Length: 117
Length: 117
DNA sequence: ATAACATATGCTTAAAAACACATATGTTAA
DNA sequence: TTAACATATGTGTTTTTAAGCATATGTTAT
Image (tube, rainbow over all chains, first blue to last red; front, side, top):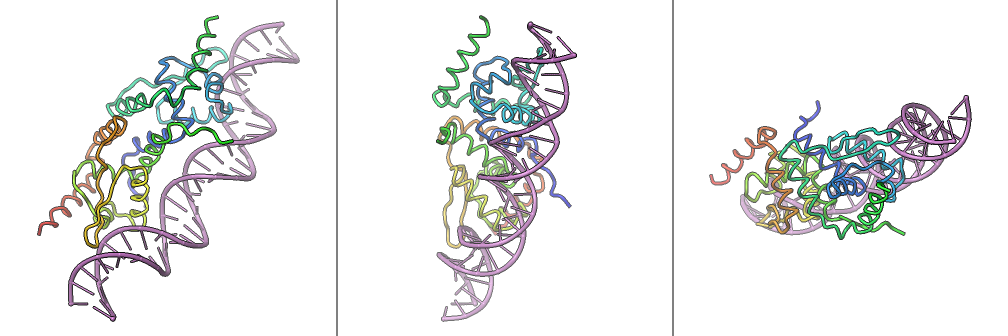
């Protein structure tokens, strides 16, 4: 007899955000306000491609991110806010200061700049 | 060479909240707005005493709760909000509907009522 | 068709987290 | 001082999660 699953959705959200790589991904998406593809995340966060892919899968499962395929790339973006809970969590993440992510921010800006060239 | 620890505090908060027992404890404390002792939590959540103790230790470590000893009891309560981040997280938890915790709420009300008798 | 690139996933291992049971510590009451 | 109660913790076990490596899948360009 399993315990009743209560607050499941919220727990899954917290769990998804309790890993450094995943929180960084969500933080990035929150702050750049743009779609970003897997290889860009790999470069910005300096993680292995297979790990980034796996973490994205987890974020997708709890509906924090969505994906859109464009040619050989897969772009990820924040799932549009659909609940007050999500909104508050997202606001909290937005509060995490840029200073904690300065390296990543810089790399990301350079990358996003290169896109248009 | 270790990776730099970034967003550590926030990750630890999310991790602390990513377990059902711990989230229930924080939810309870958020909603009853009262100190509550270990054995009351044990009864309300129907968990083993040793697990509740351990989970409380984890919540205390990340400063989500504080304790005060009164005789043979140890009462726990939410650490007063000291950051905007904490505030938003706390607001999010407050949004989790009572309906998901009806059993626990009922037990808790009965318990708190008995205190004064 | 083949090579190069982008992403995802199967499989194994390693590390972390949760649990269970016994027991220790500390407090109050008899 | 002994018993009963409340809480915490040491230890071993199981479960879950993350990482690493190889490789599969799918797309574009030659």
